[in-house]
Structures are given as C-alpha cells and as structure tokens.
Length: 236
Length: 236
Image 1 (cartoon, rainbow over the protein chains, first blue to last red):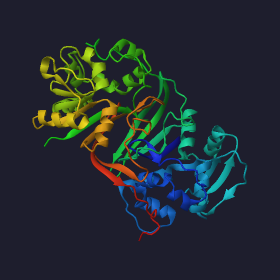
Image 2 (cartoon, chains in turn green, purple):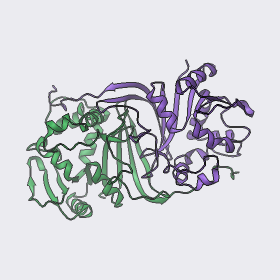
Image 3 (spheres, chains in turn orange, yellow):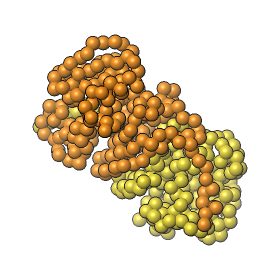
Image 4 (cartoon, each protein chain N blue to C red):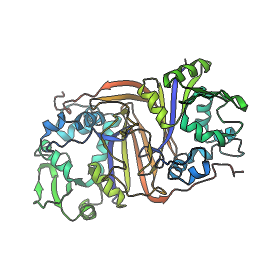
C-alpha cells in the first residue's frame, strides 16, 4: 500500500541548513557561500561517501556502507515525489539532464509551468492546486510504491500538519549548529498549528546507529491531547 | 575519572517543556496548570512507570524495564550535581525532606544562601561564583564519580558553551509539541555562541531504543569549523 514518507538530515539541535539566506536559489555558487551552506553541508556529509548516493549522481567510487544501504532503500521505495518550489529552484541546474529521482516529481508552486521531462525517468509536474492536490497526484503516479516528500522543510511541515504524512525518518547528525533553518519550530511559517495541550504522536519503528548519523524512522500516529498525570504518586 | 554529564528528555522537535510560563516556580499546582506543564509531563512520561524512578521518590511499584535501568544507571553514576536556580526553586518543595539526589548538589544562583541539608545524603550548596565554580566544587565533591548537570536547559547550555561538558544523553520522546522551552535554539539567552561556520561536534557512544523513547548518549568533542566539500564530484 502506498505510504507518504519523508526523510531529512538534521543536526542534533534540529537544523537542516545554516541561517536562511536571500541569495537567488538558482545561483548555487552564491548559495554555497551563503550562511545556509556550511550547516547544510555538515548535516548531509554522511551521504557523500555512500555508493548509493554517488551512483545516482553519476560519481564513481563510494562505500557500500550501512548509510549507503539506507540511501538505496529510500530511493528504491519511492514511486513518486512531492517537492517544494524553493528546493526545485535550487536543484534544477545542479541536478542537470539526469536528476537522481528517476520517477515523477510533483512540485508545489504558485507559478504554472509546463511538464519538464528529464532523462532517466524523472519528470517534473508543477502543481498549483496546493499540497493535498500534489500528494494525490503523486499517489496516482506512484504505481503502488511510496510517495516521498523530497523536501524542503516547509513542504514537509505542510504535509505533516495536513495529516498526510505516514512515516518520517530523521537522520540525526551529531553536531550542534546553534542557528539555522529549523525543521520544526514555533517561528512564523514553521508552526504545525498545535496548541499547548496537543501534540503529534509518533512511534519509532526503526533505529539504526552509525558513528556518522543516527537514523530513526517514525510512524506518524497523529494529533493527540497531552495529558497531565499524578507523577506516579497514586500508583500501587 | 570524573566526567561532567548531562541528560535531558526532549520531544522530537527539541522541547523539554511547553511554552515558558511566568507563574511562581515555587507554586507547583499553578505551574502544572501553566502552558509549560503538558509538554513537560509528556516528555518525562517514560520515567513515571520506571521502578528506578519510583524507588527514588518513595513510590511503590513500577517496572524494572530498560528505561528503568537507564534511570538507575544515571543516578548511580553521579557523585555530585550542578543545578540551575530555577530548577531548584521548582523542586525545593515537591522534593520534600528526602530529595532523590542523595549526593551534594551545587545550585548556581545570584542569591547567597546557607547550606541546606536534607535527609538521605542530599545537601544543597548555593554557589554565586558562576558555572565554572559550581562545576569545580562538584568535581571535588564527586568522590571520583561523575558530575551530573541536573538541569534545567539554561544551565546545560551554559556548561556546554563553556566547554565543560563531556557527555550528553538525550532521551528523545516520539512526539512533536510545536512550541515550548527549547533545549537548543538561537533565541536570546539560548544561544551557544557559535557563528555560521562553526559547530560543536559530538560522537554517539550509545543508542538504546524502546517504544516510548530513544536514548542517545554522545561524547562531546568540542567546537570545530564547518567545512564545505565538493559533494563527491571530485571523488575517485
């Protein structure tokens, strides 16, 4: 059965990049030099040596490590993707003629644009009807495989807040960045719309530890009231 | 050899309590009803059924689970504690005549106060000379065991930012709270004083998974420059 999944590399303090920059997202060189770059490079460093990543990008070499196997599994499970507009803008040029997705990608945007077909099975469909619509289209296109939220953080939060996310895997990198773009937070635009008596409950379904990163996969259970308890004082 | 350790229960989005409240910290009933309460109760719920916790608090019953063993180990490893003033204020009354520490506790405060001796081996020393001084006193008092940062979050960050922390264990609870008191963040007073090209590196040394909580213990390696890389394109 098709699940909607998301995965993200984050620092131990919850950042997936350095502080947000206003450089043109199409200008990769400028972006790398911006404050976002060092944090992003650090939290995704575990990916770079992995054969499963290098093979998708057309780079030789790499290790067939536990981390590589996780990347391979993640790519293999996805029958279609949904993607935020800012991530697409940043990736369009560096991904080149043969992007690593090899599957239909539905980009959530406000600007209409024609289907963009690339080599290797990747084609980008631009969806102006909102997140729900993009996820519905991706479900139809996924051929029974999973729909993966490719990112970025804003889209991931929207899918989660809308109750559409079934599984979330965080790759928790052992570094504190101190500041940056936060996957989850109470800043305007990053809120999940929860009040103080409510949470979104999850269940850990897989934990894999490596020296470079701890991978925790969660099933998303949904919104639930936060209960006070007697702290054990009324127990047997 | 004496290590300086800290451990904290946090939600998956990094909160250890709900949004900070201005209720009198001595007034436990008011605090529980404040916005801080529900989040704090949720992230510490895994502790309540554990025999290792109940026994320390004088409550009967409880399970001798993996989670209980972790609590027992944590108490057993600590020869002395350092504690923030706000945490002490909140605990002084509910901990009663026999607090769970059973060891010397050094409270970092601006207000001088006489030594407070309690039953069971706990005595509170009020240290006005700052965090470094409190940690140094706790080291002397620890009798070769560890110095544990009892909390709260502010003190933990101060000890970490000062380069005094050797080990950090996070108990990551599978819930998203959306807002609250954050262990790590860029808000004023919560900063680690890092610039965007610098992080604090850690190494995971133990990961224990349970359905209720994932325990990750890190060795703190210290500040390091964040490097950009070639994303694998220059590889073999």
